[in-house]
Amino acid sequence: MNIIRNLCMHLHETGIHSTAASVIDHIRLRKTMRRFDTGPGASPFRGCDPSIAFDRADETPRIAVQAHIFYPPMCDELIVQLNMIPYRFDCWITTDTQEKADTIRQAFEQHCRARRCHIDVTENRGRDVAPFLHQMQGNLDAYDYLCHVHTKSSGTVEWGDGWRTYLYHNLLGSQTNVAQILETFERNPYVGLIFPERYPLITEYFLGGWTRYSTAIKGLLAHLGFPHADMRGPIVYPAGTMFWARVPAVRQLFQDDAIDFDAFAPEADQVESTFAHVIERSWVYLARANGFSFIKSLNLSPCEVVYTQPDKTTTRIAFFVTVSPDGSLSDEDHSTLAALRPEVTHLVLISNGMLAPAVRSTLAALADEIVERENIGYDFGAWKEALLSQRSTIESQAYEQVIIANNSSMAPLQPFSNIFGDMDGTADFWGITAFPNHQDVPRHLQSYFLVFERPAWSSPAFWAYWEQLPVPKDRAEAIRAGECALTPALERAGLCWLAYCPAAEWFEREVNVDLVYSFPYEAAVLGVPLLKKKALVNQGDAQVRKALALMTR
Image (cartoon, rainbow, N blue to C red):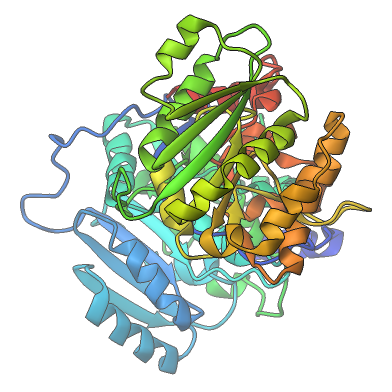
């Protein structure tokens, strides 16, 4: 084991430095439909075939789940996720004290559907990695597939909880999701690993110090019997060390004499440059050395939560603004209106420009009212005019929600019913994304899709804002007096607000750029359901191509 200790010493001496992020809150769990982004040589999974038999006839599980549970209060969250596995599985659990083990055993015996739970108490070193390797040494022969998870808590960043829930959901998340993952393994014998797409907020840490890490990884692979392992190509690994694996793809790390537990340094709140970090970065290259490829999983829209559609319990009026200089309405706008129509009681389409008669006739089933006006004041000018003219109707009908939206986005990546369901009762008003404080721009909800609950739209501050809003003369004024001023005005009146996708704001704080306009693929990964048309203009851009691919699958 001297080679392993030398690798650890090399990494410790050279050091890898990264700056901790400054972001807020934690991400909302995105319950999502599954999509795959493939690794080299792999092809995307196209659907789930329920006719495929997975479980063995003798009822012995083919799946081992190894969970390191350092934080027992997270047991409930983890058990909910593990119960999404629709097949028989055994659960192997590690923790660092007997007291924790007793608590965990009680929770799993009462609530987890695993066939068997085996719990070991190990020394607190090597984070989740050392206990994972140590416990599963000699215990993998009975299984075909291995899933590793842990109660991840990244205390050096404020989005650590968001990262954990993102990883859980992409690995588990729903019975359909897990069935698709395992069917992908079954149909593609060359796939050795499936793990989540990189969480966008960890990009800086993901790439940091790769030259130093790669030296240690090469040494580790040589120790495992692969002195000429191929590490060419883009940097790729299951960041966070949560993944599904085909056992033969990673078997060498679990051989009895592969790695001693004491090869890992004692716990000292390390955030980088440890042997556990080396192993985290080695899984893909070990699988590749064994002749296997990988697939990255990405979930896009909520599932598992059933919302009534159309929603008969919530009355909504929506004001949707489009721009029609030539009398047309785009296919994207038709799709958005069609997606929104079942969720609203009354839909008002406002066209900044006259629509062609043939276009109007196609909208009869999509809009209850069509308002055509000159393109004056941009979207905020149109909303001001419509809201004030229909105030008495809104008040007499006592709508539970008033929605304002524009046509700057593509059709949603997930049903609007799921978005409304997720946000039900969470705030007085809400939107899809928020923009952080930046120089003289206050923190605010971005205005392309906003929902005002009755406490918000019935507030005197709501109507005062629209009455006092000057008709914008240009786009800059529409943003400054419109979008940037609306949220603070209602906030000053004591109304509370939330963003459907808070991770977008964290990203913007990190990189100082507007996520929805600049990074469409990253926006989709973070759970933004409405991708901006302007962000998708440059179809030669690699990220735009990836975002468009998500929309067409």
